[in-house]
Length: 462
Ligand code: ARG
Image (cartoon, rainbow, N blue to C red; front, side):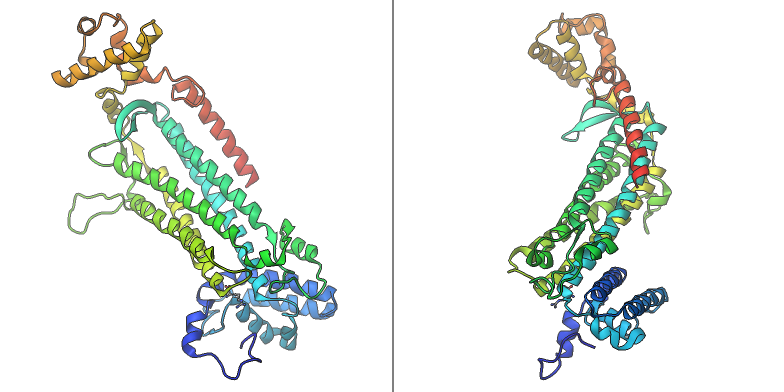
């Protein structure tokens, strides 16, 4: 069955039908297409195309189709052009000639835009839940290891000590912003295109507000040309998904490093690691590697849709059919990654002793020492020079910070007082960072409380 054909002398080539059909992937829009079609049937009744009894029959038929769709093999043998054609054929099987009226004043252009928006809205809801659960897992990990300390890095060189909890909360913040980005994408997706017709607005005075209410859309599109050709909402979704994936990828990369023999800070659970077919000793961080890998794929989807939209003249063009697969795949990959990262976080264990030893044997306390000098009136530039000289001397002599005695320190620079030695532990250096947002135990404690509170709110909203 086709929704067109009168104007043609012969049918399309099988080759072209296979090439252009979208049912293989847009079948994901089945529920949305049925919901949209039911709302549209209600609108048709109000303008007198359906009687009340006919509308009721059409609604019942759509519900029956939804029921049927639960059975395995529902799409077997279907060769319809797209999901919209498929659903109308199914309606015909249930409601006979009424199916011939369902498309009165309706175009697939507005229909696909409506279906896609409904689908994206549902998916954002699912992603929001997964994000919240991953954030909860990070907070739980932070609470499990409130004392653990690691050398914080810049340029992947040991820089200053930070609490493990502080490190985890950095990712909590990123994911918090990701939630906001998705909420923003949702707001722009929450617009009803139905009533826009093919491009010029419907030729019937449909009650668009009633359709929006029935479908749960917040508002109506304001311009029919825009409504059928706008895919910004899909780009917003892909951007939010891409940024979230970048965050997951950075976490994955950190943990691939931290769990390596070279770092030895972290053990990943057997649940999320794999062995080697040849090397019996291997425990590879495959889950994290796949998350890192898939982040490229999802960003690729964003770029793919941007390029698809780039040169399209208003309004609808068939190119737009290329919008769905990137979005469907981005959602599936992101959801998989969020779930797997949650399990990764839940099953990871830190080696707090090794992390702290790595911090203590390095010069992560150097800044705190220079700052201690400057607190006692040594100009910071001079303090920086002195501590720099101490580090250079340590490198030359193969000494660790704790190897220095007070006398030796004072021989390097008289400004070092009796407390200087004490400054040379990572734990002590940490305690200076009491500013809000800093990594002292008290600041991190406050941040953890605040994060738990936010989580509570998210769960209540969700
Ligand atoms: N499968 C099409 C899509 O995804 C549906 C809309 C088709 N409209 C049209 N005028 N050919 O965009």
